[in-house]
Length: 87
Image (cartoon, rainbow, N blue to C red; front, top):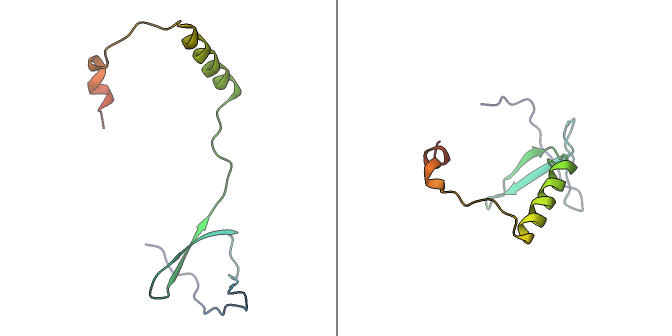
């Protein structure tokens, strides 16, 4: 369980904004409750995981081959069902 490192009261300005003191975070997720409580959770925004250009080229080539009908033989997934359902 996290320890409380600070506690203070805030007053909203005329535009209903509050300022957080000495926060290392810039972005927050707010959850408002019907009893008036507001829970803030810090968020860190970052670039999404990307797919390399090489992988995208391979995927494009595979789709071109499939469109031409150049596909491999069918296979039965029941042979590897134990591996698929492994938890």
